[in-house]
Length: 162
Length: 282
Image (cartoon, helix red, strand yellow):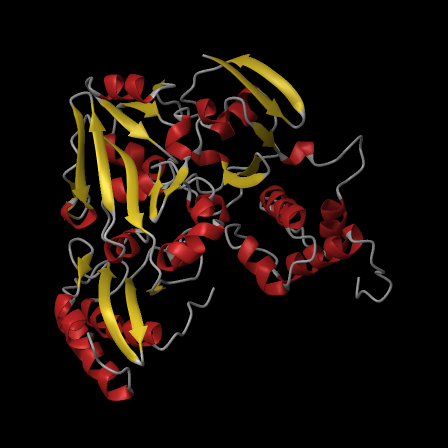
């Protein structure tokens, strides 16, 4: 089938099998390998992408289900080489160790901050509860989200532990 | 690389026509179906009829005091609907604790029902709301109360060529809750759940409806406990007796998620917590 959708702010029109999983379309056909496949069952969140701005598991979506919709992957977060504040915060706090969960966690973070620029710790935990990380123990990740939140809101970060 | 065969209808008629064929299966959010698709169907995978393109089936409609949900309404849409928060609090509570953000953004109410799992979190709330399902096929439409829809775990009265096309119920102006226990807060399937709808008048409880999830082959109501509570003042004695009664009404089994004794005990605990107004910890 011919599939039209918006990928990282660009219109895409390609011939594709409609029953291809979105993650396979991204990784195998479009060479966007930033999106990772962990469990392939919707449990780990490594394959998280944004569909119309909302986090979804790309391992549980078919290509034909994104028709005429907007998909954002980790490759779409930086603008002209400038990292998104959330990406910067993740690198600074040590929220990235092996890095396999990072693309998914960053997209969940960006979706959260777009909807709620000043989330509480509890709201952060809930928003990221669909993303597993086996390295960090989450603390550094929560700190990164809080740092990104402060930066996005233009608040001083001088007293940060960072 | 995983490839399935799909058909992408854009109207309900076209979808029903397609579903009338051989070796086809509808897919809504896919959060349950795609997880076990290969394991269940092996090499003779059915063609998937993708329902996403059926725009009217995504709608939440209100007519006077009646609400009807299209089967493709997602858990997130239920969770974030200000109208449903007032008109069906137990349904909103259930939608907001199931799965994870990613799953709730895709999982649909129609899929949760059609799967027929006794632990489907939206089902106990729909029992206490006396929800009515509309089932459609090329042969026409029929209406069925939710408690007549399930036959056993994963078994429903839905014919192969039928789709759930609407889920409707009267707005509740009463009290309601949904509480569950699961291994962790996110991404875990319920071990036990309890939903209720009831009125409080001058300190006494009336119009009590209680439904239990994951403690019988299907979601069940608890008629003896409902009858006992009706007209009672809610004090510690009454709550303890109700908790004892409801444990007898549960018919749990031991399985991968929990054991029967624990489930039976927790049904009583959740009922007490709910009637005491203790919220689900999120």
